[in-house]
Image (cartoon, rainbow, N blue to C red; front, side):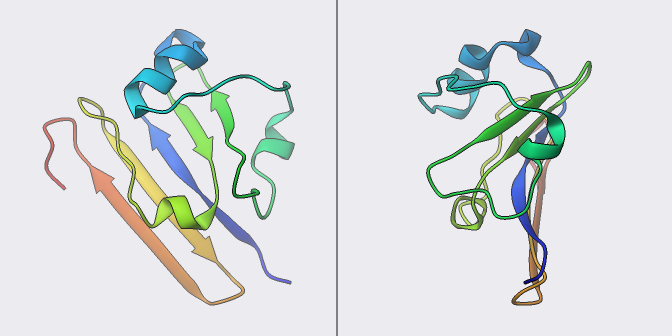
Length: 102
């Protein structure tokens, strides 16, 4: 089994507030449990799960490959949506600048 990971990196940390992140993405997010970064960034995030890591300057959201194919981005932020699948030898990278250009 190969390594498979997908997610979104945003150049702001939303004051480490899950509700502010949810508003920016237009998603209804809720905290179910707190986990370590190693768990959040693990292989194969389940379809109904979002793992979030707030750093001092950015936010990383880990989600399923299916969501990455929709190329999520946050308006007014630099953001990188990505997916990597060693199993199928495929990847996706979509970068959007703060001004809305790709």
